Length: 110
Image (cartoon, rainbow, N blue to C red; front, side, top):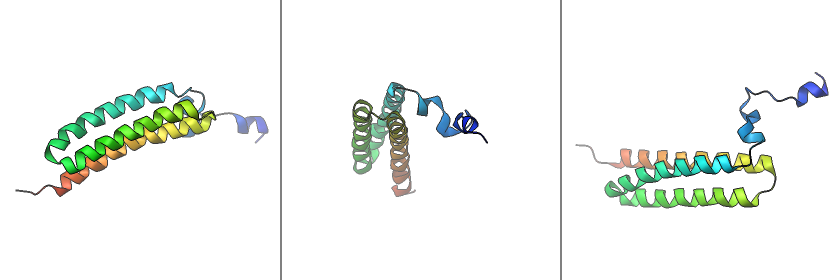
């Protein structure tokens, strides 16, 4: 394989997607805000039933989104910035999922 062929990007590879290579990061902030808002609504409703899980999870979602804003404005290396934003966006979803599962499995049945 020549050097030119190895430098070409494969659009089917996850790491070669434009959102992880060439974007400014603003698109990740938009999707992060949408994700955070959806998870936050679920956490608020969940906090009514399990405040010990819902409110801390909501606070963590807010902190992670704030971290996204900080990363977008401070990290200069484009690839590092985009990968970090993607991981933080995923972290918001994971926080919501873990919180929901914690309430689901901690609730008494009957």
